[in-house]
Length: 67
Image (cartoon, rainbow, N blue to C red; front, top):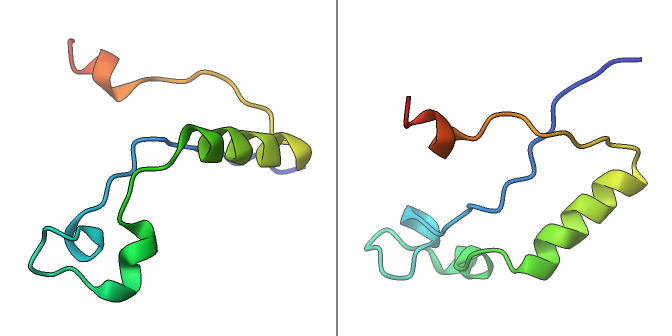
């Protein structure tokens, strides 16, 4: 059985083509012009669990920046 890390991140933010305030914004990306909702993050974890993913804590970039 192969093992591969999977990262479900909640820090997505609209940028460049997905940011309505950017001069490079593209209307076709409007559905991405928002941060993910808490319910969407929970659904992503639930989907992963349903598929057999096992989640474990790893490093946090913000914590590492102190060192």
